[in-house]
Length: 418
Ligand code: GLU
Image (cartoon, rainbow, N blue to C red; front, side, top):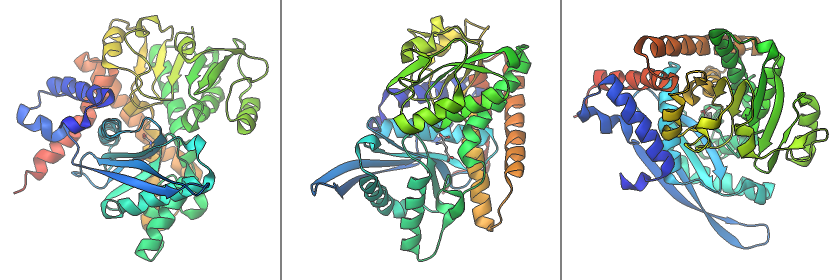
């Protein structure tokens, strides 16, 4: 399985190996659980606006098909490659199983910088990718959703391309669509809202007054920005935010509503009036109660894990903490970890609701969506805390154990064909 070789894939495998030891999974079963079921790499030639032709690389990895269709985001980012996508697909499997969703994990991406493509180029690229993926996806096969660099508009193009191919409208082919096309109310806010809910539960667990807490957030995309608003509603003061271009800090708290307006115009938090500038590295080491990495993988490493000054580490991103950093955090019980597969699961949970609504053509109100979301997160949180305490393992190992165990049991019960 050399083809998947990449630091992020190695990291996902290392975590899996630790869990497999904790669960005492027979060696014969390990590779079957670990490696992706299937992967597709495509070349995507498109016409640029200047008349030239450029070829991009597209990927989709489906990790396992044991429990239902595969589910996971589509990422547009220059660093996208097979190994990264495979790691993210594996994490989706454990996340879906932890939340009891009838899915395997998947992830896809195109190696591109969406900021350097015009809207028409992005549309052509998205449609070409979808066209190439048609034999590989379907509402009962593999269902995409937004991830880094993609949004509801991209999902709408995928839905349109697929629907035109099939000959009728197929909203269940993607989630995170615009609400007018069969998207779910509350999907856009789901990940950040889930992070807020879980941080609130974590403050209860460790006896921290959330109304007096401060937070620093790395990333101000869909996850980071909604997490900030959600935490603010619980009374948290957001003191620092960074994005790909830089960051801002104000110990008295940032005015999030003004910041939202500023980012809509300037496309970055950088230069927001009334705040000092701060780097991504500085943000991670800032004294605060709640630290939320909500950007890329491998941000908390052996270099900075010993220097974190937070009480709660809430992983809005996928894979922000390396196994070496985890080993350091294991010596720092004062930091309560909400691991990625739990912390950012709100997104895929409401994606599941969207898919169910699309299949039934019967749509729910937002209160129903939020209420059902919180119920699923509550169960996953309680089970994770209780397993972590009972087995004296980290919150990450507990959450992953619950997910991996469910997939392992499903595979065992279905048996191996032929
Ligand atoms: N991209 C999101 C994640 O990493 C959402 C996936 C989905 O909704 O299918 O969890």
